[in-house]
Image (cartoon, rainbow, N blue to C red):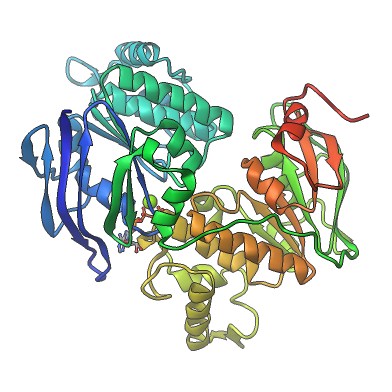
Length: 507
Ligand SMILES: Nc1ncnc2c1ncn2[C@@H]1O[C@H](COP(=O)(O)OP(=O)(O)OP(=O)(O)O)[C@@H](O)[C@H]1O
Ligand SMILES: [Mg+2]
């Protein structure tokens, strides 16, 4: 076999003293898909940033195509044929797809003016070659996240990558989009490319990877052929202990409806009816799961429930009060918490500390505020407690959120939202980017909230999660509820599939 990359004894200490990589060594063979897995904060992204010239290691070396290299910047890495699609996407939102694709390598007329025609031509050629379709003239901010990611991949391909790093590319994709991505990755392999693939979804790792490296706490635990390991074995190597998951028994005490939606209609800016006569109730002590292929109205429904979007008509009754058209703050004040699908957009303020992020929705109340002043001592201790309870890997509550790993940022959001004693919890993709060990924790906490009497409204692209957690399930297709399951015992993905795809509907 032909080794394209040798990682030798990489040690990385961040300025705050966190040792993210503690002597990492493994080889990557050319023309393979090599998966890198490990718990949140294990050091995966850090290692990839080192390969891509964003971070500098204190020790160790990287041998790339037989030569020792030290990339000083991403530009340097790109010149040498390495591309990276980041965990949190990094395109310029206000530029068009074609502009983003050619950023830094723009073709120019007489070396001054942008040559837009040529730009589009180059972009189209690569898009066709690899079968990745993107709308070249649209602004990136107007695109769904799956398409944005395709743009990122194309951007790397345009720069002639030989080694492509994908940091949790599927965390934000629907199962259908993931399948498409896997097809692309297999095609890239056929074209002789090498791929490093990071994911918390071990099913995918088994499905796509040739080899797997497991890291735990900054160290390599194993590098093996994917065929030698089961999903379960990979998970146990990651967390270093046994893990088991169970279907959650329905809570014994189901109470009054806390969230009631009646005949909700929503017509969007483009005059398309996105939600049609949606009605459901979630009672105290219940988890109502929404199954459905993403893009069938889930995002809009969640945004309406949490005040981020205005409905066209209908009622949203929360704790007995009609909250339709109220502001997010008024809705929060009425006992609603929200774990948003996009943590970086609606979840955290990156430039703020962990403790600030934990109190943004409650700082003006007792015991965080004493009159006009904030009780920082109390807030610090509160931050420490939540960090511990929610298993956030962080040095202190004063650390900036931007210094956390992706999954740990998600845990900060979950910690804030589940600690406010909410009566209604709107949980949209609650375990996105969270490792298998912490997944268990988040699920347990949602169940505990349910048992304490919260009504939980769960939206997830992961059907297994919906089946595992829900006491009742509704299926959303094309903006309508097409099926309701009040008894989920024995229900499987196969039972839901035909409804999710619109081939079947209940009378
Ligand atoms: N810029 C930074 N400053 C300080 N510490 C950091 C910084 N970036 C990451 N860390 C710390 O380094 C450790 C490894 O983080 P890293 O992002 O590499 O984890 P990861 O394996 O990618 O996790 P996840 O699965 O959550 O994305 C964590 O403890 C994290 O808090
Ligand atoms: Mg990461």
